Length: 271
Image 1: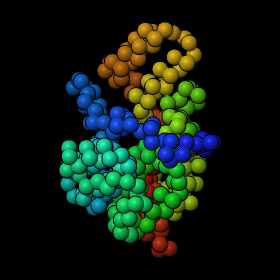
Image 2: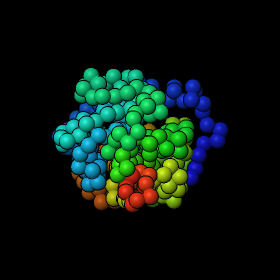
Image 3: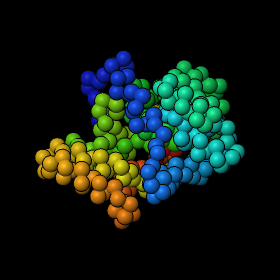
């Protein structure tokens, strides 16, 4: 585990989450290929949840403008809820997709105990000031056989080792800490979860390109024009297809929420 010390206060960090922050936007891919790539990513998330739970109540923490929740609604059988600290993104989720989104923290939402069948956090855990407290609250609101699905940057990944200080997974100061597989499992166990699935099958091509751009710019290996052309080439659809098999460095983990001493599953899932 690597963490910031000192880290920005909760007041200071807000300026790093403006309305134009990428995670608060609804992407508008320009080509048919990119639109399908983006949609594939959402479907892949949904299928990972559906692998463990077919229907029920689902909560997406840090839901942004509600893209994943909107995708889950397409499958039917789900009552979806979101939690989002950004008023801008929460309003977009409500107005664009008609979603039920609480604006604030998970703890402020004060959901009933044993209420949800599935809880998801996509690239959220590493932004939290007190992840253990949040995991305990998730544990409380999950049903005895509920599933938690999380995705985080992987400190043990090949690209983290390859790019070093230029790795996009650091994303300081927004990422307050970055976890490896061992520390992630320890954190989940501390929160009352048992890991049932851990996957490194899917990597993020855009994140790799961002790391590459940081490395090219920081190492002084090329002019800004050269860097732009390299990134432009790598974003070409044909290049993306040819390099797709190489990207397996991020991971998914599934954990069941608190086991009740009777073998019932209630820990979660992480990616």
